[in-house]
Length: 229
Ligand SMILES: Cc1cc2nc3c(=O)[nH]c(=O)nc-3n(C[C@H](O)[C@H](O)[C@H](O)COP(=O)(O)O)c2cc1C
Image 1: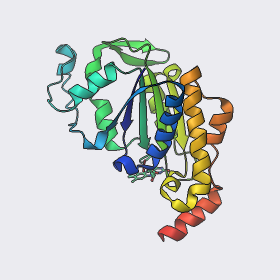
Image 2 (image 1 turned 30 degrees about the vertical axis):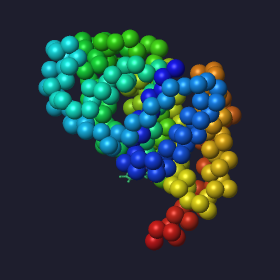
Image 3 (image 1 turned 180 degrees about the vertical axis):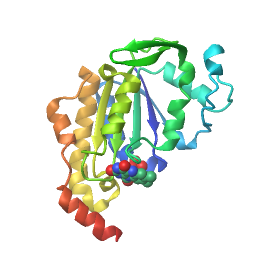
């Protein structure tokens, strides 16, 4: 099984979110020997989509010659795509959004109604692909924070093909003093990865633990404000 990881954090390996993603992948890999490839999106040459739609008339070939050609091929030959990124302004970071826009050549101009919304008909068979979103954020609450990003992810990849993991208080992963709470949390992420690869889903118990803030939100806010003010 081929797993493609997009690291959308501009902090590369120091990404708070990548701590969780690495733990999740470790859990996945302990169940199955996976072929995992990670792409640090920030280091790729990906220009903005020009909106010309030439790709739709050109057999899926984009007029821009940059790293996207290789990335589209990686997407096509992967079974599972992990989108690991921090929440930026209630959405994904701009460098990752540029990549997403440039996946336009993978679908045709023709559109169809899927459920209650329209989408372009794919030029390829995506029915067996699975998508995982692992998104960390800096605030201590998910409410009125992750909703827009979750909705966008489900619209892009289809709810039935998507697994969504959102984690508040993510800057804790880069704090040594927080190890007593981050280490057990990363064990839960490993278990999530194990479950995902063996059954295709994560149990409500594990998801519940992932969705529980590592430290109470009032205390996190106090610490954050005293450190940063
Ligand atoms: C430009 C910018 C926008 C952000 N917007 C949000 C936000 O909308 N909600 C939130 O909870 N945190 C927000 N954050 C905080 C990051 O999500 C948080 O620091 C995260 O842990 C960074 O993850 P990374 O190290 O994987 O990049 C923002 C940070 C930046 C730099």
